[in-house]
Length: 104
Image (cartoon, rainbow, N blue to C red; front, top):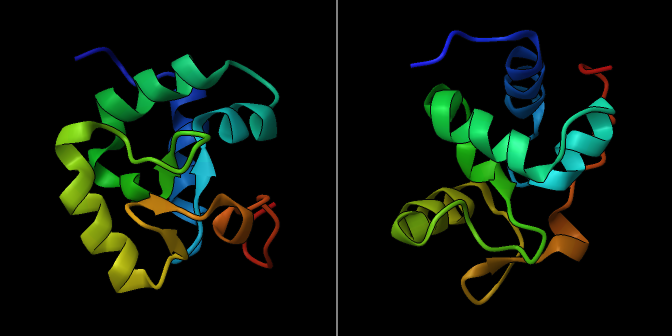
């Protein structure tokens, strides 16, 4: 496994702060951090994301991380009360903008 780099640390820190019931798209994370892009965020999540709430990071269309994780994502989303449209997150209602009292 690659060593954790500063960009990866920032991505994982942000993901840890996404509130239950909310999500950010890969591109949202890159835009919020002002660096990288969706693919770079995806690489971080696929390499080191197992220890953070990975199901809160989705594709821009509201689909989960990978087709083989759909049922696990759905279980987490339902448990947290994440707004859904079928088997996708309702991005209009669930997208988090990165603003909260405990994360700057």
